[in-house]
Picture (spheres, rainbow, N blue to C red):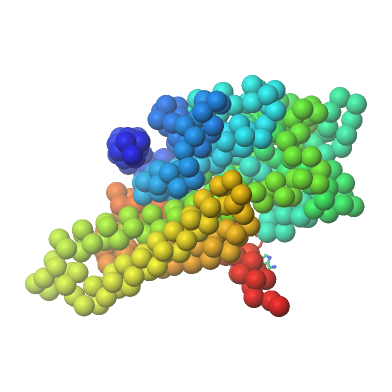
Length: 377
Ligand SMILES: Cc1cc2nc3c(=O)[nH]c(=O)nc-3n(C[C@H](O)[C@H](O)[C@H](O)COP(=O)(O)OP(=O)(O)OC[C@H]3O[C@@H](n4cnc5c(N)ncnc54)[C@H](O)[C@@H]3O)c2cc1C
């Protein structure tokens, strides 16, 4: 697939030389980066051809974003979130919504977000309190969102709200929110231990007026709409963890074969060789559990396929990959001695991103809840 070669060249020219300074400045990639990524097609991979997309499959998207993750998971995660908003709008949006919001997303001028989490509700999505009240000329939205990927800069946000506080999950709807409109107040981005390329942040909706045609999922469908695609998201997060483990092992092996200690290369010392053997084994196990989830997601997308069959494989993959990635990357870093900490190597960035992977698209504990539910009689 020639796009994979283009992506490898793009990472080498646009991410690898810059990622350490973006992270040191606690910044996302600049706007020019997203424009270049869009020119390569990275904002339109799964988008249907009639909407200006490449109509690639989920597995092809994964391979491309894995390659970007080897350079920076934070940047890959930011891009994939914009891509997903564009794809959702293209596939489910009205002609008016597409005309208003799709061109900016596809050209990389505008970033996209999907906003479920609030300061008071993360795992317990059904308890969100951002409200939508029907008024004469549309809906008034009020409330706050937190920990939203790309919120540092995004202007097209699929935002989940509660339309009826007595209805619980059945009252949840979503709107496409415009970050340039009055009533949208952006918060300062999160200052984190790493992963600033994700642009995690929040915003307040203060009497934000959404028109009727900006409702994306109506009340009663919002909760389910948020869960549609979650198995794909869990699978690509797992795959990104695999990609970071693979990248870390590659760097550690190269370093370990050239660095000398006590008269031989450090990888020849049994302790370190065995430690990397453990990582290689975990990497292979992760590859297999991710492959099983990818197959289930792809099968669920086929005509007549059952997307629910991907629930467990995706939960297994995300739980396993996120849990093993962090110690595996740390083990690779350990074999490099202090040098592994240098920002010329990706390992410390991968380590922070592996921690983040344990929260996004459902925490590891929520994966346990999902898996445990399948064991109950
Ligand atoms: C970098 C980053 C990017 C993000 N991007 C987005 C985004 O784009 N959109 C979005 O909507 N959200 C996003 N999130 C938020 C993410 O989805 C939440 O962090 C996650 O859902 C967990 O919510 P919480 O952090 O509020 O933790 P809480 O829900 O407060 O939970 C705290 C801890 O308790 C555990 N816990 C909660 N309930 C249970 C239970 N029943 N049993 C056992 N343990 C439990 C959790 O797993 C967690 O470890 C992002 C988060 C990060 C860090």
